Image (tube, rainbow, N blue to C red; front, side):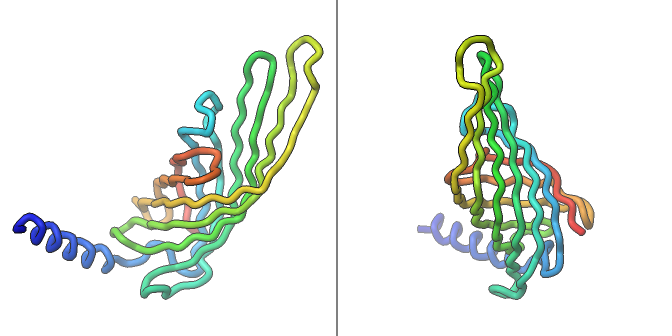
Length: 175
């Protein structure tokens, strides 16, 4: 019983401290993230290269929360046995930011977009020359950016559902 009381007390004090932080992302901020993905849908694919842009549009949600909207572009490819396969993901995103730790922007969001997949035969023989198709995607994600200066941060983002990668890491530039 004493352990439970101690755990609850520490948790309450920690959460009280975390919620009291100043926001690192506010209405009017614009952020460009550039990242490299790890843990792709197919582990044999090259790293996923991504870029996203976001602008804060609504603030003061649950005191310090901010809603941001923007876009995402991701690219991955794979070449093997005469085939070249590639994925391009173009999407819109909506994020909810809430400050939990000083100098850290924490957020979660929804991404909706279009995935373009293509295959090209580059080897010898009678395989088809080219095929491609696209499809609607939606995914949930959560991320954080730690600002070591006023406008530059390191970022990490986890994607759930359909996402070109499970983990993006990179750099954020706020302006």
